[in-house]
Each structure stands twice: as C-alpha cells, then as structure tokens.
Image 1 (cartoon, rainbow, N blue to C red):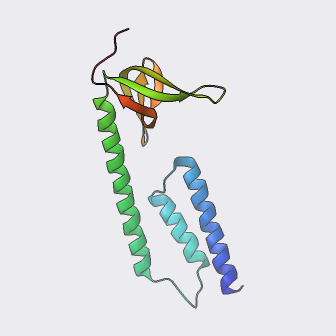
Image 2 (image 1 turned 90 degrees about the vertical axis):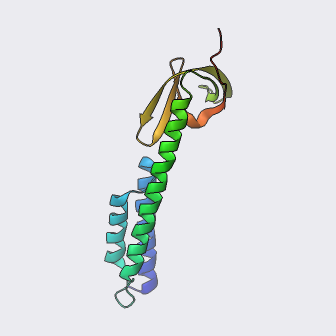
Image 3 (image 1 turned 30 degrees about the horizontal axis):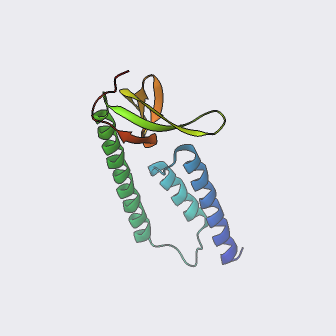
Length: 140
C-alpha cells in the first residue's frame, strides 16, 4: 500500500470517527482521543513515524479544550440560575417551522449533560433561545 493510500485511509478513518462522535454529543472526550490515537498508530507509515511529542501535545490540547468547555458550562449554569424568577423573552419554533417569540417567568433550571434549559411557565426552553431578560416578573 502506498504512503498516499495510507494517508487517505487514516484521514478517512479519523473523519468517520470524529463525525460519529460529534453527532452523538457535539464534543470529543478523552476516550475519543484514545480511539483516534490508536487508529492513527495502526495506519501510520512505518518509514515516517509520528513523534510521541506530537501525541503528548495533542493530548494537552484536548485537556485544555475540555477544561474550557467545563468553564463555559459552569458560566451558563450560573447565568441560568440568575434568571429564576425573572421574565424572559425567548424564540420558539412551532410545528410548521415558523419562528415566534414568547415571554414568561423562569420557574427553574434543568441541566442535562453540558446543556442547560429553563422551565418558563412549564415550557422547557434552551438557554441559547433566550433573547432578553427583564429584572422582575411580569404581571398577568
């Protein structure tokens, strides 16, 4: 097998692994990194091996990225908890695909994995859908 064929195979395998992983949870974790590393080692060119320093560098980058994601999630959670009892306006999409805005008071916060949702008058709203926050509750 030629070097270019091996490179193509490795790239295709890595792209497939990345695609399946990001489809499931939108991020790579340590296990995904190990799987990609094992695949890369399996198909690397023996006449031009990759330096172990490069792997350590990639692992450090993945670790940093993971910590940044954790900080981002924590900041979102604090932001969401600060919205409890406040009136929010959020975008919603109806069953026919039309985008509309709705307003309500945040009752509680729901955290699921790295996603944060608000319960607004019994409706579950993604934190990213909130377009404005008022300082007090609205009177009905």
